[in-house]
Image (cartoon, rainbow, N blue to C red; front, side):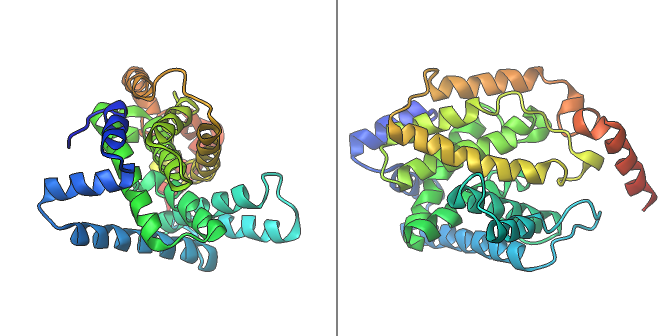
Length: 291
């Protein structure tokens, strides 16, 4: 890739008068040796899987094998029909869709890890809900995924995207940043605005630990995906409004690396601390062992 930082990415887009998504498609072709048509078709297929996961999560029984989670997306959708959500229709829909995909993952369904299975609901929650709201076609959404991929590439090569390495800030935080930056571009923002959206999003999750109850990607992972989708919407709107990340986004990524490296092992996906070691968390873990 010709870029290693978000600053370089934005500069390349400006110099070539290209969106992040289109630039990333070219870079991916150069790296893989495949044609633009082949790479685009593959990414379109990934987006189809995301949409299928949203629909399945809203329709099917998503109770996990552990019995700890399932059907919360459908509860949120039912609530939206009964009451006016405090979040409003748009944000609550994105939240429900993110929950839906995460519950499909927990119930052994097919998802696209973006960037990980533990954070797989955030980008679909944001993308699918916004596509339906704004009437965008799948081609536009596919370019959006390339934009998200470019952002994820920078984060992964300068920090982490794994909870075992850097805590949940690395998984959910990275997904929020990817979704926020891509959404800013999908809404017509510049590459610079998209990069600011990433920094604004990541700053809101610094220090978030990875503490899965029972070692399963269910509690609190699924609800964090729901919250993450809402945060991504907020970060994109801030950036489009002209709000800037005072600390440059690349520096925020470095802070995520610093914080994650200093995080104790018990807070990095080991279930040795945090919510996993509360009295209720330990009780649930014991019940799972008996099963």
